[in-house]
Image 1: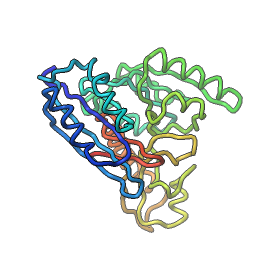
Image 2: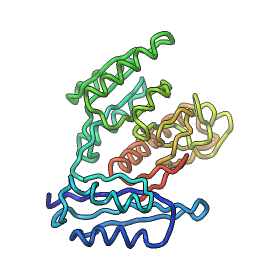
Image 3: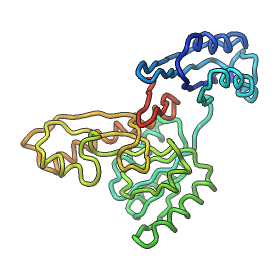
Length: 285
């Protein structure tokens, strides 16, 4: 418990006294704030904050914090979530035939860079099986056809429930998840798209970029919604290309970027640094 912190993420209508009341709540229960970051949307008059404090010496047990904070949250009509830094989420990775992002995530987890347990890798192809099983992870094959997609999603969801999965990462999974699937994991499915969204959404962005003769390409980590490649953006980055780059060169350069951006987006989620705000995110880095 001595190294465990509590993290409060919340949003509400902006008004005077919110920060003072939250800080006072923590102070009155003998808490020590170690991180605090806030943002106010002037246009929409909304307030956002991420505040983290030590549980060591805190007067409330973790089981009591939510009930104690609830009256204050109700007074300000807050949307809020409480997290603890010693909780390790259970993650499933979905992948198709492009394995670079999957490989990167497995290696980062193996080296202790990501505070998450990879409980399963799920694919519509068998290409990743050897890689996954080499690291002692569980691999599940769900082939997808036009006629069986709904039935396979039902089986996948059943598996995720049985494994108590908290988070799904689409590491170049080349299937569109249905709205019924997404309803089970709102803002808990992260995708990597191999372009700088909203540019070149949809299929084959490498070819789209080449055809347009762009001078930079990008990658985007975002939450998945029913609108293809339009979910709230978590992380993005770009790299330069030139007229000398063929499609294969663009693809090679983009792969490096995709690895970095997906890992960054996942880390921000795992560290509870993201608040979804309509079609956008507030990211407290």
